Length: 215
Image (cartoon, rainbow, N blue to C red; front, top):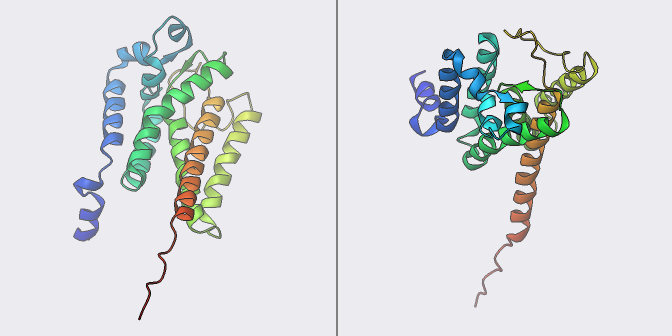
């Protein structure tokens, strides 16, 4: 038990980037007055408040929303950061901006947005694809992907984004951001595809050394 605990919480294996982002989300959750300054606000972004493209993902609409998002974010960070340190850190820095820009251009009716759920789903899909790649007959990872796709379909077909939302928000005007989740999913798949093709290309360029001559 002690060995398992040490391996799980070893300093070198802690997801420090994910922990810092989770801490920032926690601080903003305790300071409700910061919400209006940091949340994704389409009108404010249009007027030059570009930081909201990133900081909007730190804002959560109520404690249930916060606990679900940040809890899963930390779990994914523990699974990803020590296995894929550079890629996971690149993802959590760039994916929020990609998601926000996608929402801005493709969902003009989404005036306010917040939360880490779309980022989480992108990371989850990347992790699922990596696990499935190791064993294509493993039922677990196809099930994860199927559940995710089912959620996206449900959100897209029921109530224009309201369907599939399992968490009650503290703001009744907030709806599930289907476009954001689709953007996160595409990012996750492209990230996996990049590592997959990059690994295949590396393997193809490595050739066995010719046998040494004997006399």
